[in-house]
Structures are given as structure tokens and as C-alpha cells.
Image (cartoon, rainbow, N blue to C red; front, side, top):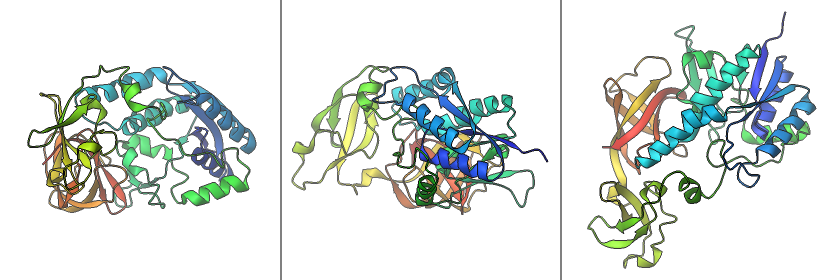
Amino acid sequence: MTKKTVVIGLSGGVDSSVAALLLKNAGYEVIGLFMKNWEDDDTDEYCPAKQDLIDAAAVADKIGIELEAVNFSKEYKEKVFQNFLQEYKAGRTPNPDILCNSEIKFSAFLDHALTLGADLIATGHYAKVQEDRIHPGKYQLLKAEDGTKDQSYFLYRLNQSQLAKTLFPLGNYLKREVREIAHKEGLATAEKKDSTGICFIGERPFQEFLSRYIPREPGEIRTPEGKVVGQHEGLMFYTLGQRQGLKIGGSRDSNGEPWFVARKDLEKNVLVVVQGHNHPLLFNDGLKANQLHWISDEDPMTNWVYASKTRYRQPDAPCEIDKIDRDEVEIRFGQQQWAITPGQSAVVYESNVCLGGGIITSAI
């Protein structure tokens, strides 16, 4: 019987390294694919692609698989980065990792893998995919075993054809187990820190980076009552719920509580701030979202209790879907949610199954 060929995205990190090893040990014919998706001001300080490629090559050599490097910079700029800039210009806070997954890692990458003769693709994401037991031929995206590392939130825009071709070898592993495997097998990435920052662009001074592409428009920081308490550098640099970097700590009122961003007034170019994490203006009962994507290709039921999260590092919150129009959903929560942020994604779950979601347009 001919071995199935799996092309895995090998990033030069510990997760994809161990995922590749697990696939090789499971008997697949494995090919590693290193993706370079950013070239503008690519420096070792902020976007260490050279070192990542060296690490990926060392891992491929150690476990005995081929490695190919491919450049998707053009696709990334057109399909991810332009959207990223447009969202910030509109005063929203986008999540480029989500679009990067659907448009690059599971689209351009998948297409390229198929030209290499792949039967399947794989990544080092912490998630699971399985065939739907009730609807054979349909696939479900599930949460990973390691709830602290689960990345299904970032994968909710994947479709049936993508999931049908995808393996997530780390879905049943805890992060510490992955590190242990890497150590035991002597992989070069065993001690490598997890990457942070913007998908493929890396961790860098955010205001400086964004201001290269969008002009700064400084303005006033005000309280809800209209009192001026500081100056902002441009609304694009701030997100709802933000506490750090406001530079107004010295103007606290007598209660001494820290300031938080509560609203952006785009027409007046005003950043509205409130004092205290529990200020009422930071909480809402629900949200509206558009650009909907449901993994099963069917709308979820309304008036049924689901769970949703409106940002990655957030516990699931019980919710109901009030209504679904052509391309808009209204979600109501059992308890008010903190700092619901336009541009972020609301992702809906039923138990450990990710149903899909949409881009938040407003809190309600």
C-alpha cells in the first residue's frame, strides 16, 4: 500500500517540528514546507525568517524529511495585510492571524502542497478535525486537548474542503508533552520560545510599524462627560479595553483607578476613556457580527444555548443567537461581556465543536 504524502508547514518552531516528527512516526511520507510571507523591512531583529529557516532545515534533517521553502509575500500582502490596514483605518482592531490562516496557511499553502503531490496537509496548530458522526462526509473543527493552547478560535474560517485535507497532529497533546518530545528527540527547536506579534511580520514596536502605512492623526482623550484628560497619537493605535500606553496616569481622579479605553469617536477623532476595570461603559449584553462563516455550511439554530468568545484569551461565555440575517448575526450573552471590540471575531462553540462565527461590527 502506498504511503500517503503529507506536506506540513514547518515554521522553525517547536510545535510544527514535533508535528512533523509525529507524522513521520505514524508512517506518512512527510514533506516540510517553510513559508516566507513578509519581505518589507524584514530584519533579524523583528522578523527572524533566516534563523527560522535554519531551524526548520535542522529539524527536517534530524527527522529525515525533505524541506522546501516557498514565498507567499505577494499573496499575504494582497489578501491579509491590505485588509489589516483597511480595518485599522476604519477604527477597528483586526485579527490578522485569522485571515492569515484561511487565506495563506490553508489556501495558498494547500494549493502549493497539492502541486507537490500531497494527499493531506498538516500544521502545528493546537486543534482537532474529525468527520461528523451524524453527517458522514462533513468535517468538524474541535478544540484541542490542551485548553490553554487551543487555537480553534483562529481557525474558525476554514471550510469543508480545507478541513477534509487537514491534519492537526498536536490536537491530543499538551504543550509540555510537545516540549518533552522535542527534548527527547534532540530537536533543535526544543527550547525555542513561541513566536508572538503579527502573523508572519513578527513582534515589533506597533505604533512605529503601523505609522509607516497610515498617517498619525493625534487628538484629544476625553472622559464620557467631555473632560479632556490627555492626547492620543491616533485612534488606530488603541483598542477597546486598553489600559497600557495611554500616558494619562498622572491625571487620575481621587479614586485612583486606572484608565481604560471605552470608545472611539471617529468623527471627532476623540478617544473616550473611563476609570476602573468594572466601569459600566466597558460592558455590553451582546454584539452584532458580519462576514459570517459557518463550518458546516449551515446556520446554527437561534434561541439555543451556545458558547462564544470575542477574543482569543477569553473563557467561553454562554450565549444565544438571537437572529441571523443574510450576512449578520446578533448574539446575546447570559452575562455582560467586557470590552467587545469591533474588528475582532466572535467565535461560536457547541461544547468542544467550533461552529464558526463572524467579524464583530458593534456591541449591543
